[in-house]
Image (cartoon, rainbow, N blue to C red; front, side, top):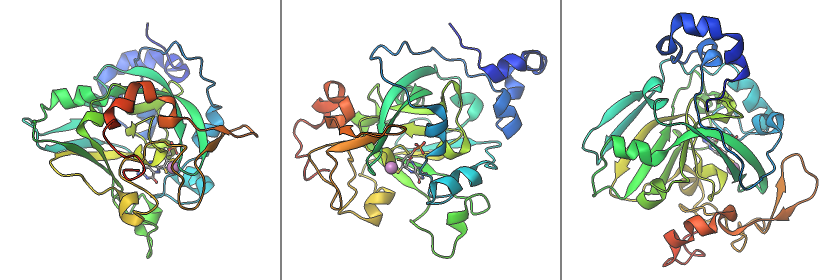
Amino acid sequence: MNITPENLYNNRRHFLKLGAGALIGTSLIQSKLMALNFTPSENAQNLKISDEKVATNYVNFYEFSTDKKRAVELAKNFNTNGWKIEISGEVEEPMTLTMQDLLSFPLEERIYRFRCVETWSMVVPWVGFELRALIEKCKVKSDAKFVKFTTLFDKDQFADQASFFPTIDYPYVEGLRMDEAIHPLTLMAVGMYKKPLLGQNGAPIRLVVPWKYGFKSIKSIVKIEFVKDQPKSTWELANPREYGFYANVNPEVSHPRWSQANERPLGEFFTKPTLMFNGYGKEVAHLYKDMDLKVNF
Ligand SMILES: Nc1nc2c(c(=O)[nH]1)N[C@H]1C(S)=C(S)[C@@H](COP(=O)(O)O)O[C@H]1N2
Ligand SMILES: [Mo]
C-alpha cells in the first residue's frame, strides 16, 4: 500500500499532468510536491513517536549554525536543486546518482529510536532505503573495508562554513565499517513523518544509524567513497578523547564531561535509562563481539 502525503493529495492533478519524472527534481517547490512512495511501518515495537514539530525544530546542523533555532531558520532557504551523490573508491561501477535515481530504491518507513551524544533522544518515523541496496548497485569490491560519507561544502548556503572561524573542519565527514554499512538497520533517509526531509534535518538525503550516537547520522550527503582504511570522522578529528569512530550508544561509557547513563526524550520532562546500542543490541551486538567497547568507543 502506498501512502499519499497530504501535500501530494492536494496537488494530485498537477502531479499527473507533469508526470513523476518532472517532479523528482529537487527545487523547494518541487520537493513539496514530491511523492514519497514507500511501504509504511506498522510500528510493531509500539515506540512512542516524538512530536513532529519538536523533531524538526530541535536540530544539530553546524554548517548552518550551532544554535538550534538559528539553524532551523537558516535552513528554510536551503537549495537542493540538482542534488547528486558521487560514488567512488573501491567499486566496480563508480557512478553519480541523481535524486531521481536515489528515490527509485525501495523506500520504507522505519520508526527508530535516535540518541544524541548530548543526552536528548527522540523516536522518528524515517522514510528511506537500506544503504546495502546502494552498495549492491555499485558493486563494491571486497577490498573495501569502510565507507566514507561527505556533506555538501557550499559557503554560499552554509553560514558557518563561510565564517572566519568555522566551528568544525568542513566538509563534515563520517564513516562506517563495511559490516555496519550493509546492516539492514542502516538507512539512507530521504524523508521523515511521511514527507521529504526538511533542510534542517539533512535534506535531501542523509544517513541514519540508530544504534550509534546521532553525530554518525551525517546530513545532506554529496559523496560516498568505499575505502580500504578507516576514515577519520569530523568529530574524531575535532576531539578524539570525546568522540570515537564507533560512537555506539553505550550507557556504561561516559562522555569525559557527562554521563551517558540516561537520556531525556524530547518533549518529556523526566529522563529514562539509555539502552546499550540504543536498544538494538539483539540486532547489532554480534558486530562488536571481539572488541573492547571502552577502547573502541
Ligand atoms: N552534516 C552534518 N550532519 C550532522 C550534524 C551536523 O552538524 N552536520 N549533526 C549531527 C548530530 S550531532 C546529530 S544529533 C544529528 C541530528 O539530526 P537531527 O537534527 O535531524 O535531529 O545529525 C548529525 N548529522
Ligand atoms: Mo548529536
